[in-house]
Length: 279
Image 1 (cartoon, rainbow, N blue to C red):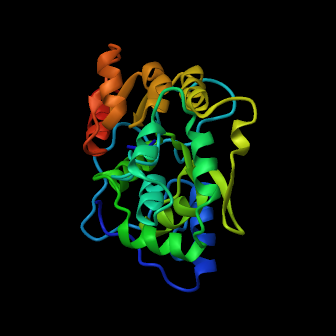
Image 2 (cartoon, helix red, strand yellow; image 1 turned 90 degrees about the horizontal axis):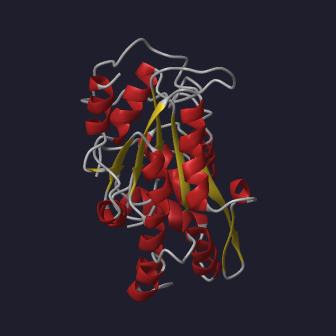
Image 3 (cartoon, one colour; image 1 turned 60 degrees about the vertical axis):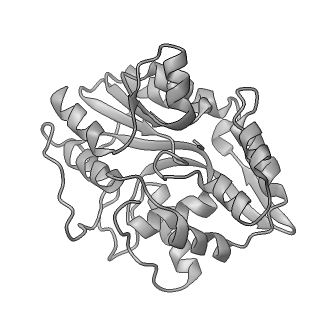
């Protein structure tokens, strides 16, 4: 987490409908028709975007089975600054004057938990759901190849999930904008008087850095090789555990300093090509 892609589907209808569609996408339950027809990693084909070549026989909609072992690849990714070109949380706080650059920079210390910083920083961020949704639609850009990579995973039965210290208030409109459905873990945010209250239900007994690593470990226990994508210090444990890591920003620097193999993350389609070459 934290440090443009193809045009997404334009928002239609009320803000409530827009956000409900985003929630469904983030949960991996698909968008309301006619955006998405299938339950998991399915996209409506975008004009000019073609799926990448298959890496092998298609699997059961890219899901990791509850029991037994499977072969092939799985993928885990951070969101802010990884899937998006810029950290959305930082961008919001800076743009609306709720944090300065010094505060943001200090939040990347290895001594600071991302989830703790997010709770503190947004507690005083008086932003409405509509303001955040409009900000995402107009300013937040996806990293090149993100849509194509999801198409590739869906076509080849590659389980793909997102683990993030970001929040649903901006993740929902992002996924709705791009018309994608991905299994995801985000903080739950609620607009309250004078700010935003954030909770991380999936971090009851662990911290974000360890949780990300646990998602990689889970796939490996099932017999999958795992590719991980990240950009921040809190992604380091997961990157070190993965069979293949793509990193950018502070994570790439940290991996190089500590001798953890990582390829620069510039385009998600490079990962699809790697999976195809190493079945």
